[in-house]
Amino acid sequence: MDDSPTTWRAPRLWLFFQFLARVVVGLLARLKVTGDVPAGLRHGPLILAANHISPFDPIVLAAACRVRRIAPRIMATGGLFRAPVVGPAMRHCGHIRVDRRTENVGQALHSAAEAVASGSVVMVYPEGRIGLDPGMWPERGKTGTARLAFESGATVVPVAQWGAHEVLPYGAPKGMFGGIARALVRRPVIRVHFGPPVDLADLDPAVPGAALRATDRIIDALTDTLVPLRPDEPDRPRHVDPARPVDTSRMHRRRTGR
Image (cartoon, rainbow, N blue to C red):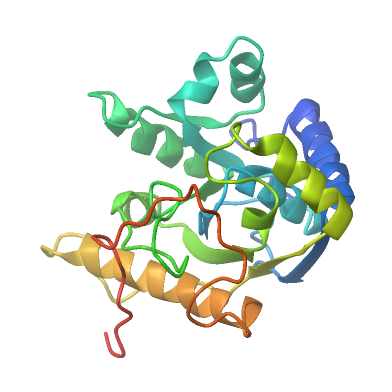
């Protein structure tokens, strides 16, 4: 084990929050976690790339990572860091602030690269938002995850999850209590799968378009990892949130070749 002072270790508060997330998910749903990360990368450096389908995702993923004994530093929207209680807790736990649509958004990539360099596991949402694809498949991604992988040299592992949308609606906190009440009664199955690493070794970051090609591979891998989690919902989800908008402008079409 690397005991150098530059190696990041998860604060006890974050480990407690992961335990709490596991309890909360267990009350509201039946969590099924499959797959794993490569041996030797459980404590980093590693990038976990997850699909984003619900405001409940961070709690689900924190719980799933606890099952696999991983304590990731999550790239999260800057609004959470501005909240009176949540913000200080997020900073103490080592999570990474992303100020979208501001001149400071580039700082997030630099902070994430520093986190990976310190031996951390960093969790990102390559889509950059809760996806609005009509079928709830991963959307065309932003290039930030690919650029982080190029800059850090870290392995990218896709983490697909399905079922969180049955607990919290898109518009939460609006409709939150109704969603929680239904989940307490129905206890839907939430599945999380850690897929095989994404192969980016043949891509040269200096070549124009490399980040876009790497992004497509990451989203393809995430989609492939999600397919087995929803075998009876290949086109559209059974559970439809009427408040969820639909946006087809960023639909991702998988490529059969590289």
